[in-house]
Image (cartoon, rainbow, N blue to C red):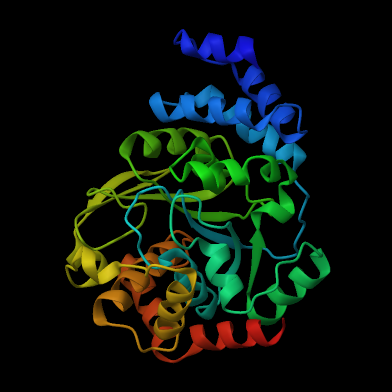
Length: 330
């Protein structure tokens, strides 16, 4: 590791193969935690290259527990995290609305490293039992249209870095990797990124895959559609800028999106919203993200049609029905 660190300290970059080998070795526990922490810290001070990110992704997917689910079309809605906004669990809530609209969802998530409550924190608090038994996951997808993949159960390499990420408490390149390494390899993905540089990198990387993707970035630094400002939306067909009114019928304030100070508070906010008791602002943001995910499936002729499907799923209680039945299966 010393030679690798020296190379990076001298402002050199890694080839895709070098990055692959380093993360493979990290995943196999070949380095001391202080070496890994030093390696991760370097990427807090410099930008990651496309080759490096591809190499890291190659290694994580090679080490991952494979998940083969039977479904023609699957969706993941995920943000890179690390935007420092401490919003409630918008992506996870959106998944239930999307599933309620009839789209199969295979959500990949983890505990929060730089936030109070990641997707895994809130799902666990609400009663979901993490599992990597593919037959049980398949049963959830078949019955309610949604299952949850807790990243550490599918990425053994993460066990070596999870404590370090938690202790650092800041965004690392593992935030960037998360959306790229869903072991179920969904056919469709809505990916939120925290800056435009990451949007450019993801656009390049996702175009190399068979995934139908939509990348979103809130121009005031959110890794999701926040409705606090305009949102940049990037697909394989190009990019477009949308206003809060176009996406969610309204502009909302940052304080409307706070996610609580503990995982328990985050779970309470989640439960309140999924039961239809959220504020207008909370509901609008979740519906906008769900609508953009549905629009990305190409099953709707316009964003407004996808938005109407999201509203129908939410207002009729279908989204809550998915949640309730999923939790009853645990």
